[in-house]
Amino acid sequence: MTEVSRIPQHVTIIMDGNGRWAKERGKERVYGHYEGVESVRACTEAAVEAGVKYLSLYAFSQENWNRPQQEVESLMKLFFKSILEERSGFMNNGIKFVVCGNLEPLSEGLREQILECMEATSGNSRLTLVLFINYSGKWDIVQAANRFIALNPGKEIDQAGLESCLATRGIPDPDLMIRTSGEQRISNYLLWQCAYTEFYFSPVYWPDFRREEFNKALEVYAGRDRRFGGVK
Ligand code: FPP
Image (cartoon, rainbow, N blue to C red; front, side, top):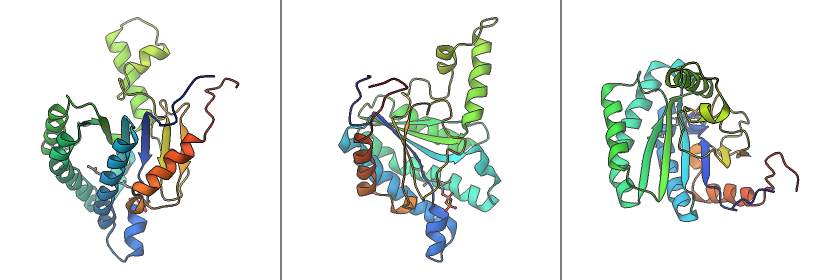
């Protein structure tokens, strides 16, 4: 059996339930997204304390462009604002910030903000915080295949080769995936990378998913028996 640590090296989260959280309080959906940023901060702190090395978050899927224009614009503004405001916190806490996804359709201002933050925090190593923006799992596999072919003309694609071309190259596959708000599906997220990931579904809406909830997920993970297709 493969020996695995009780602390996951990589935790990934599908942050879900912001809209319903806001609606239950008679507020606009965007209010839930703003409150969700507080959960991002709380879970990042909890991850650092627990010794998790990679925390990744599904912030905006390629399908999310289909939301009302006003909500999309609010989310883009929120990304800009949060990345700007969190940058000094990243530096003070040794956090390396990385964004994965197709950044081309984003505004130039947001793209610059992302690249500057990635550059400034690139030397940090306590925790890598990965934000998936304009990402989808199927897109990633197709872009990886095209990239492989462009880099290796005439060569047959193999697993290691494809992996080395994914948007997540260099980032270990998630050990634990959390989805909040009671939904139990993968929503075109890390389709290739979640082959042996453990799943944890919480009924709690993302804006309420703070430190204790995150630690609860780590506890459940610690009790899981991972066999990676083998036997014990
Ligand atoms: C899903 O809830 C949430 C999102 C699509 C956006 C999540 C983004 C953040 C919390 C901002 C994080 C940003 C940074 C830069 C740290 P939903 O709207 O699908 O909720 P619903 O299912 O209740 O409608």
